[in-house]
Length: 519
Image (cartoon, rainbow, N blue to C red; front, side, top):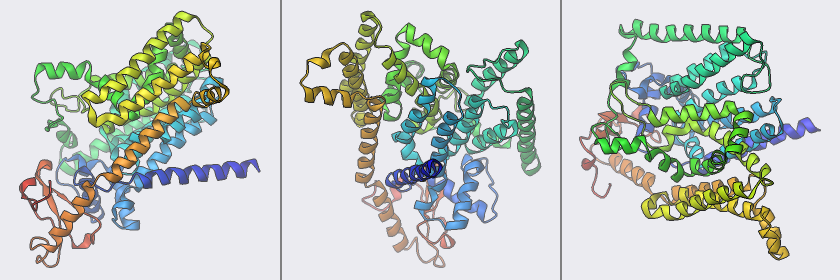
C-alpha cells in the first residue's frame, strides 16, 4: 500500500509541475526562442549549420527540440516540452539525492524542502514554460553534482561525464562548475590517500574507479567533440569562434566606462540577486546564517559541499567573462544565473533549519539577527523607489525578512502577549519553511498575473497575421514567413503556429519597418 501511495504521489507531483509550466506559458517572443526553433527545424530537414552561431550548435537543446517537432509538430505550446521535462528532472534529482542520503537529520529534511523551493521558484517556472536552453543545461549539471553528493560505490563515472557533456552541449557556461569539480576531485584524492572517508560529508569517498571512468569518458567526449569540428570544418576550434565575439547590446559591458565596470564588479550583482524573487527570498536565511559566526561554522561543518558548490559558482558568475576575446561579464538576467539556484535552494533550506534550532542562544546573537532582518525588511520596502519594475522581487524579500522578524520576536516571548487567536495566527505564519514558501508563492502568482496581462505575444501574433495577409507574406508561391530581426544579425525567425512546410524568410532591415502600431 505504501509503495502504491508513493507511486501516486510521484505522479501527482509530475502533474502539478506540468500544470505550473502550462500556467506559466507566455508564448514565444520574437527573439532567441525563434532562432532555436528555426535551427531545430533545419537540423530536422538535414541542413547542417553554416556558421558558429550558438543557436545552431547547442545541440544538447536543439536536438531534443527537433525530436519534439518530429513527433508532435511545431506548435509553440509543444516546443516548451524539453524545458518543462528538464524542470521536472531538476526537482526530482534533488528529491532522489535526499532519499539516498545517509546524512543527519538537518540535511535529510533539507532535501525535500529544497525541492519544494525549486518547484515554486518563479525564475525556474518562467523558463520551464519557455523554449529555454538554460533549463537543459541546469538539469543535467545538477544531476551530475548530485552524483558526487550521494557518493555511492556503484556511482558511474561515465554517466557523470555524459551528464556534464550534455549540459555543455546545451550551454557552455556550465564550465563555471569547473573550480568546484576540481576542488572536489583534489579533496577526494587527498582523502583516499590519507585513508579518510570524509569528503565533505559522512559517507565513504568515491572510489578511484569512478574518477578513472569519469576522466576517461570526459577525454573521449572532448576528443570526439573537437574531432568532429576538425573533420567537418577543418578547424577543431571552429565552434569557439562564436564565443569570442562581443555580447553587444544595452546590457553588455563592452565599451562601458570604468565606473560602470567597477559597479558591475562590486554592488550590482548583489542588488540584482536581492531584487529577483527567484534569488532574493532564498538569500535571506543564508545571509542570516553567514552574519553570525557560530551559525556560519555549523553550516560549514554540516553542509560544506553545498557551501563550496554555491560560492564557487557565485564567484564565477560575479567575476567571470562571457567572451573569450576580452572581459565581458555575464548580464544581470535571471536566466544567466539559473545554475546557482539548486545549491542556493539547498543552502536556504539548511540555513532555515539552523536558524530555528538556534533560538535558545544568547540575546546578543538574537540582536544581530534582528538587526539584519530589519535592514532587509526596510531595504525591500524602499527598493521599489529605485527599481519600480522589480516590485515583486523586493516585496518578496521584505515578506521573508518579516517572517523571520516574527519568528525571532516570537521566541523572545512577544507572541505570548497576544490573544489566543493572535497566538494561533503567529504559529501558523512562522511554521518551518513557511516564511520561505509564502513569499515565493506570492512572487510566482504575481509573475503569473503579469504574464497573463502582458499583451506582447498577442501583439506579435497580430503582426504575424498582418504579414501573412500582406503582399510580402503571400504571393511567393503561397509561402508565408516571417521576419529577420536586425538585432540578431539577419537570423530568420520562424513562427511555428503556421505550417512549417510553407515558410520562407522575408527580410526586414529594421524593427521600424514593422507595420505601424507595433513597437
